[in-house]
Image (cartoon, rainbow over all chains, first blue to last red):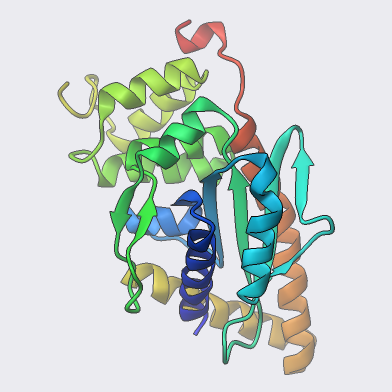
Length: 199
Length: 63
């Protein structure tokens, strides 16, 4: 089953990154699912905080675990941002699954990794660290597609009691996302003029 | 998470059934599925880069 393949890919990648001692957090569709919003996604995305000098070690660790870099050289810089994309084919899978490692370059991204929390995913997986829901909302607002804004609204709605609204509102102002945040807040809580959770 | 697993598993089956109907064989359907995933990945990678890069605050953002 594809879901088992995605989870097996995350587990193998998570462990390989762990052997390097890399600070990391799950983002993307799996993080959405961990925070009560499911949507179709076949890849596993991990945000990492790492010294650039250790990238080769990271790639070697993942390669030794059966991951294949999608590009050569594996680390690509696009618009100044680092991303390493791998394919992994778990035993018995018909097709490979994508495992994307994204380099945290800003204070916000590094802090999001640092304050990620343990969440247990299904299939007997060991716990993984997942970015907190307010950070996931910011991440989705930054990604900026219509589907990302819809995801952000759903995470806000489904986790209203778990979200640190003060931190979220501070982040959206600092990162230039206040207008988009207000839009998704209205989507999440139609008719509510006040912030969704008391501060 | 269970809902996500169902969505992925049934989504894959749904997509593959559609490609099979269009392409005729399992092998061709699988190839079409991979092509679709690759196209989707281009858009997804661009969104991930945007997410990492961020953007400058605008006057409407309260700064």
